[in-house]
Length: 81
Image (cartoon, rainbow, N blue to C red; front, side, top):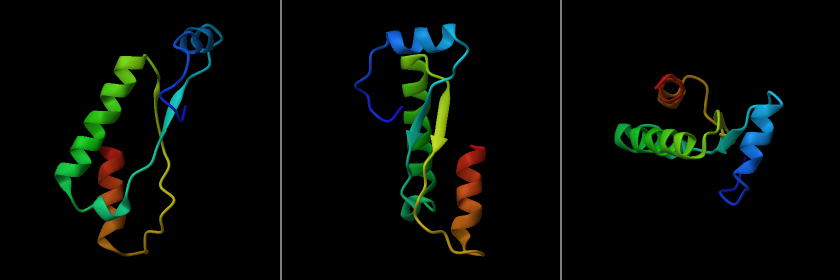
């Protein structure tokens, strides 16, 4: 799901057919070093999942993260959190 404008009945239909619906959620890699921003983003995603009875998040990070940079571990921490 990539829009907040969807019919909630879609969730019921999908679940009745054993299909899971997940949100596409991008994250600004420039904010990976900001623990407060990461936690706020996580809280927002969890709230949206609970509120809409959907099934999770598909991380959609398309910005390049240089190998060996601190952002690699920070991204891993975001996923773990």
